[in-house]
Image 1: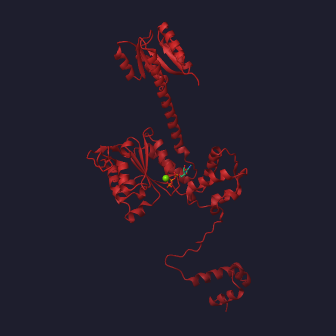
Image 2 (image 1 turned 135 degrees about the vertical axis):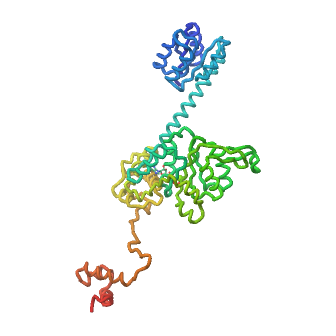
Image 3 (image 1 turned 120 degrees about the vertical axis):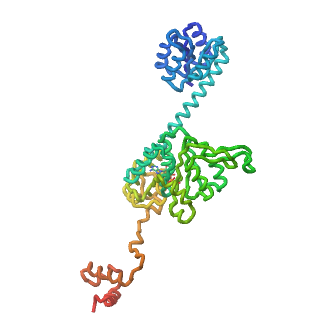
Length: 453
Ligand SMILES: Nc1ncnc2c1ncn2[C@@H]1O[C@H](COP(=O)(O)OP(=O)(O)OP(=O)(O)O)[C@@H](O)[C@H]1O
Ligand SMILES: [Mg+2]
């Protein structure tokens, strides 16, 4: 492991040397600075992990020094060294952002423990910042792939909504169109990004459980409520609550939710206290809410409340330009994941992919590409590996659509016979072939409809 470097800032050279000796004995590297100027120089030149700062410097006030160090590096642990008895200055320094303090005369053993603790905490902070950054990257709008006009409209609307103060957003779309992905992108691209994103799927729980998950409960609210529990709405304060599959939320919970959306306040189950919250609610559904309202399965007032800002992600079959782009995007992703080097997608495969209707939308496409990448031994993805439903040629079995008020079958037959005869230049054998009829059968119908006397 690389040794971590501690920067000692003290104008007393003897103290510097003693500290350096102790630190090196403890497994650290140490450099010293005798002035504020030197301190800043080292911070820029070396990879410093921690600063031991004496508050009395020849060229600077200790507090001022502290601020300057913070400006260079906001994560860096700074440990203040003060004379015994000047606790007030240590407290002031802590308030100004120092990590901890030690008093002179120095107890080296205690000092080493404090240093170790501070470095450990810094590593966590760094790790969390890294995870956060990764998560943010994962859920930005740029991760939503698509070049069709319709998806671009969805994205530009979502970007505006994310930046706005809008407190309630509804995302509609068939299963697998990317509602989860979009909800997260809206959160991570809003000013709420550093606050929690809490998700709950409304169908996963019975109504009473869903209620206590959302609103929390007071001790004694029901037999198992041994202690107060905060609900998701409270835990997400300042952030976003994502209500997945709201179309299937039970009516009893809908009423309570409506009141939260209207007044931004609620009570825990079994509680009397009104709790005020600042959360953005993003609801998603693959069910047509208007139909659910008509079927009395969804409250109309809640529907109108949610419908202030609806974002609808169109199904993949209505934006076929996106299919190949997504397929290549997933190809690259799974190549990396499974350490494969598949170059592309064969012409024939592309043909099948762009013509298929994708009832499972992007999720189905993604799963298909994953499977193909795992199994493919060729340089490109070949049709042999496509599931049969994708390889099936498209048969449109509703070319002839029956009008609502019906139609005379004889009139249709008459028209088709006339068209076949015209197409065949009134050659009866050819016309019979076009209609898959025998010549006699055609002649019978020609007589019937007055084409032959
Ligand atoms: N435009 C897109 N670009 C990249 N990946 C996408 C896109 N749309 C969807 N996906 C991916 O497809 C999968 C399904 O998306 P997601 O879970 O967001 O769909 P959903 O609409 O929430 O589905 P359901 O209604 O079943 O919950 C996820 O793995 C998601 O990352
Ligand atoms: Mg989903």
